[in-house]
Image 1 (cartoon, one colour):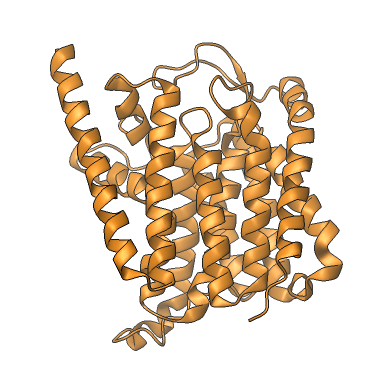
Image 2: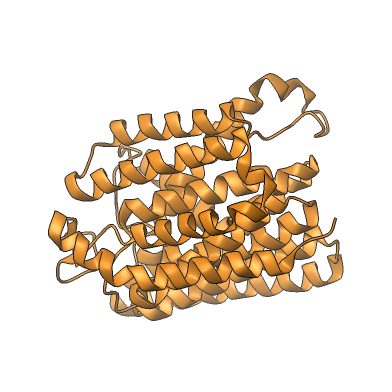
Length: 345
């Protein structure tokens, strides 16, 4: 399929510029409406920080879509309309949560509604062509909703260190952009490129030491866009391998979320209760600085995304080399963390 890479570059650049320009204004707005993150026991900030920085990302994303709408036919479809409605709802939920700290039940109900709207408008993981999965066809809508809700919460959970969620999402979005280009979905490529640009435009003021946090306004929106983009693009190939590729592209937030749920179940804690057991917390508690922890997690995200791309282009020799390097890096981190923990005892 022919791809208009100039269009994708324009989507990235427009979103980047608008997000970069609007971030200072969003920072001032956060103080005016009282969207402030005050220091807490499990948090890492030592002074009050403005939240809802994600509005700058949303502005960059939406404005870029508006500018490019005459050039992308898929922007004028029922599926894209459903995507936008869901995006607006998830942003409104995030704003209210950043100001009033909503309960988990309310947030979960809205996330279900958002996922339902996306599915009903045409976003769906088609499992019919997966080997031995034809029996799951009646559940494809439920599977898609679980995927969307899962990624929304996964990105939200890793947003605990300056620049982590924005950087990891940028890496995942760039990876998705290439994966969706391979599968032939122009809409998904544009969404991924736009998301990457909006995140990178926000990152200069969010990287350690951060001036502003994205809050749930940003993190839940990022997870939502990643989820829908992967459904539209990566899963378009209708191969079982596509789910492995999509998971690798977003491995860090997915694995961190899975381990968080398992950890809370083992410790008999509420699944939705926040804690300091996430990977970024563990790295910092092991002796790494905030910047070092974030750069390590960027590296892990890059490696897993690279493995996804290499699998997609069927370069298995390079995939094996990168995968072995990935395992060695994880082993080195484990050994260092173990030694640091012993020295601190």
